[in-house]
Image 1 (tube, rainbow, N blue to C red):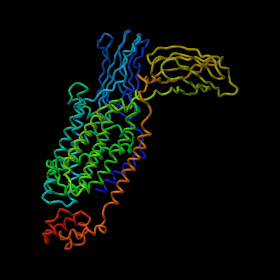
Image 2: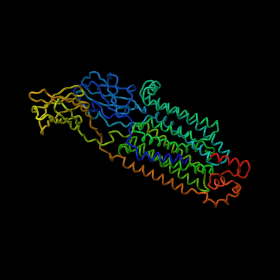
Image 3: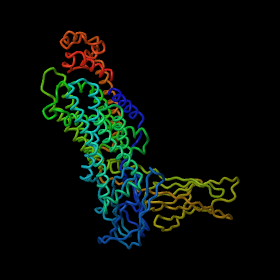
Image 4: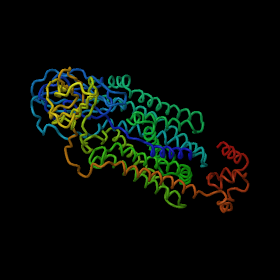
Length: 639
């Protein structure tokens, strides 16, 4: 158990120091035409530039005109620079008459199969009323998906907690009949929890598929078979089935719970993190998310299993048995709480863009609820520890059940977070200052540099710098002309005027977002015109629908230091606990007090274990002497 706690703390330290930025659910970054824009000629297609890759086969698109009539569109096509790069959905359009149009779209992310949807409004030779374009959506998650995710987390946590307690029963010395009954109940509880989690994982996928319309089962299978997120899902489901098989095998074989359950729990945690977006950010962020999941199920699952599966849970835990279990589980529980807190802070800093996102978004407010529940559960656990370390006092079963209820609430809130769009979109950030677009190329003997400023749809300045590489120059520059072809195919010719030496300037309206083709034509007397094509992409500036209520400042500086502080506090507490543990030499005073247990008749190894507090509740075994004492020695040597 101490090795598990040390591994969790080491994992946390590495993730805290070396983790990089994370990604959110696939969202619409910008579009062509832009939401709320008006174009003079009907576009041949709509481009949706998404922050992450999505599944084109699962994409649904609806287009309606200003009378509400549906307009047929072509099949969406997906283009992406790489498997984990931003993607563009191109939707062919029929010839559109003048009017206002609303396009609704729905698809799923390729990595975690999470549904995402949105709408945009544009006009063709018609202005778009400001009231038509609202603030960015911040929808609530689907209740069915939240319930299924909660069941999945509860099942996984229940299995992990039952295995932790079953492993502790191998190490501690409590009443043998109670320990035997506890082991059977824990392994049966673990089997049911694993089956429950596997079924819930399948339900999550079907619920997500149902949000896309059509046959949910057929859609779910197509997502598993044809998307990159299908492989992690299949691996996790297979591992969840392996959890159930392992619990049954341990129950029937009578073998002690040792390494295999720890390996399987870690594998399921990694598979769960792999289904998220952090897997694409590198192994360190994958380790951070995996550590967060594993810490949550170790702490929460053990408390839940203690409250539900141990004998006597309904009438209050045996104070003696609970005290022994707590002594061995305390270090691991401390490590789990430390990892859960610090990794949660690290993950929140990249999933919540700003102070406003934390306070006013659905995701941010849900995160605050989760943090509050974790804090209350930790305080309840501290109270339980105090009660169990008193010589006389009330049983701690009620406190354990309260802590378990709070941690069940933590898993419910976590399910809501997983099903909610993260608050990392542009609506929660300050608009970025335009930087302009610059490109250079060589045309014949001329080196040209074209700059488009500010580089967003609207009024722009085109600046061409022309330098002749030949000396002397064969002819002076007579004129510079720009040919402009917009995303909708419209063509214009603009003459540039000389500015500084070798620089030519033109002011032009580039109304449409998207990729433009700009041809710079340099004319010189007696020579063929030198021309070169440039293809700058104009991205619409972020339109913030409101001023910040509190602040658009990032949470990263604060949460980073808080994560380091949580790590330091956890290490300090662990060191303090180790220092306060009584050593055998310091416990010699208890030898006389334990004389009635027959300590003097035990071997040196047994005596040290008794004085260290690791063999308690064995009054009948010690007094019996002979074979009973030999059985205790065999069990001690089996450790």
